[in-house]
Length: 93
Image (cartoon, one colour):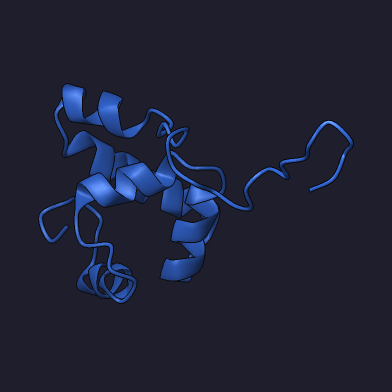
């Protein structure tokens, strides 16, 4: 992140505080719902400048890396909550 245009030492430190240490991680975060908001809140800046920093991080990556990181992750094979209730023919669990 130190080599990405616009990213000050303070911004890099603030992201490091939450274990975001690479441009790839910033781009992946920015691709999530609320990602720009999360970046702006972590850095203590408005969403507009946060979006510009996100774009600077994107510009630091190859086109292939950008495309891969901006796709939603397939979590279909991971347990994400309570298992469905299993019942017998009489509705008993």
